Image (tube, rainbow, N blue to C red):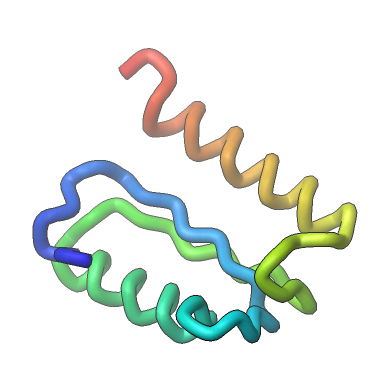
Length: 78
């Protein structure tokens, strides 16, 4: 995913219990670490007890909150 070339801030949100082949949580964690290692602005959020699709009200609200805060900080008035 060319972590060394990422210049745009990136927010990663992943279900902690994701069992979908090809999107295991460890992949997001490795990508996050690669991004940080190359100095990129990034944030990794794990949603507890969530699989590939988020179902719990708390998880959906948390996702919306994280997205809102990210957009306010890195996109608004840019």
